Length: 350
Image 1 (cartoon, rainbow, N blue to C red):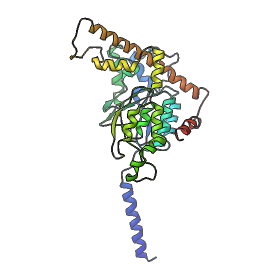
Image 2 (cartoon, one colour):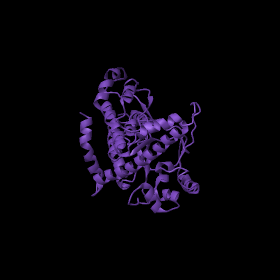
Image 3 (cartoon, helix red, strand yellow):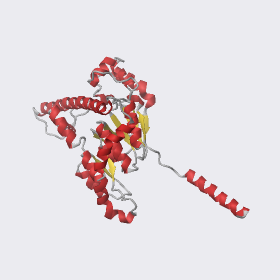
Image 4 (spheres, rainbow, N blue to C red):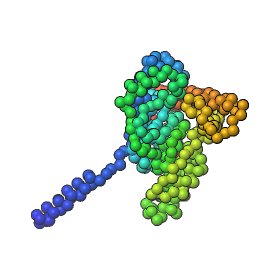
């Protein structure tokens, strides 16, 4: 090869490499502890009294001080995510309660696997709120009426430097599989139909239903998201999304909670929203024709909602730790958790 041609070839390769390096790349999903949710700073809500923290959790054992109660899942879903999530769950010994989400999606398969881990370990899922975020005291069932204001301020000052600040977090595409898996789900799911492997954009319309039938549809049904989510996904092109809100609980979860707590929390939440109570229990609805007995009735509804909410929190705490003990009570590994998922994934992929 003439030297001039060789030099031109090398120059072309270097230019291509530099351009490739300059292209934006999707950030792989990470599962990181929300520092403000570690149990050591959470004990500040009780004046540093770990006994009161244990009482608030309703558990006989005290969580490790450095364990996390919440993790932040952010980035693009891809291979290796389930293993990374499993490693975080094992490291925190079952004390993780909630997964906060911020992702535009990615690969479907790994998102399905991570979703089954979330459901099997009885974790809550929340789309990360916009703005400055620290783990809220209300997530422990505490409010400014139920714990000393000074203790909340002490906690907020102690963890303020660990705040997460996001302008416009969202959960779209494959991320919605993680959101759907939550024992309790909060936030907007931006859904769309999937594209069958190897299909062009023109062909995907004809294959959308088959693609959902083979994976997405069955997954959403398994997680109990309701038909509205499936319909919205089927009717939304890949290039865009439709914002949807999932029911807080899957039907199977809701039925279990109804049986054990004696009230339907989702219905009570809807009633509370309708009548307009704020976080402090003040009645804010102005449009109803108030009579003598209505305020008392509304107060009883709110009291029942709060009692049921406390019951749900206790059950969730107990069942989550029981799930971890079932999988890892005598020791477990990432590999053993992946093996335990294999049968569920096989059913999904039939």
